[in-house]
Image (cartoon, rainbow, N blue to C red; front, side):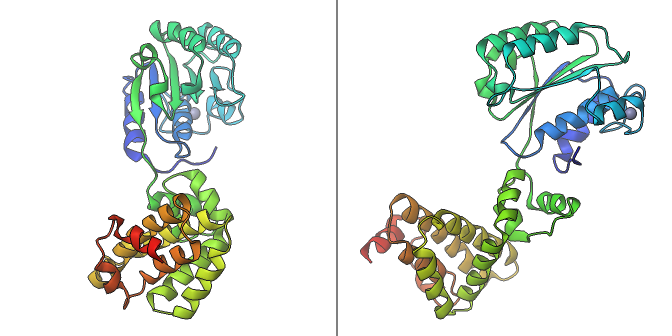
Length: 326
Ligand SMILES: [Zn+2]
């Protein structure tokens, strides 16, 4: 099991409730995809099932029989179902609930993780509801969802809700380091948009990202030759447009975050960031000439040209109009 990073507040609170034996029997972990909710559920399950009394430390002790069985995927009192695409059926759910109604094989607690529980069918939700309404002693349900509003109110009202946020760039950097992967830098952490799946994209496209970074740096220094060449090259690559613009935005955002102590530079990057957002809209939604869109975004990164770009009311249709005039 991968070590979980981030979400310290929620995880610490949950671990404390478990130790104090004040954890309700039904929990709902909500938050966008790819941030580690399921890992947080597994961590709590390990703690609840650990043979230490009244329960193990956060994530379990790791060495008792229960922890070893859980890690190998063979714990008889642990159930895990996923209701995503091609996921568990209502029959699978019924079988799981039957198993949970038996006495604990290991004599301790029983835990069920229901992943993507927001994809459960209406019949499934009803089946589950009965178990949530009449909680058996020492039996815990953890529902993991990205969209809680998809669940019927009857199910929601039975669960204590825990919300999980996007991962911070710092956490993403720590995850990359912990995985022994070359840290792709701040831009990558920011570009990952607070999700683990974002890291994968960034990792797979490290070369493209680093190319965009160096062009942005050249644009800031006013290197028109590099800017012009990049605009030509990227502008003619229709398929790569969406990614290039996203990378541009991420690199500019990173520059802005790094220039807090240099107000002049910060104001350049703030304008460029807005222009990159406008550029995405114009280039992708309005199909404005992509070469011109990229040229404009890159030129607005130029320290000495920035003044001119700043005179435009940023975020207004002014930039859009100007782009269209060309
Ligand atoms: Zn243990």
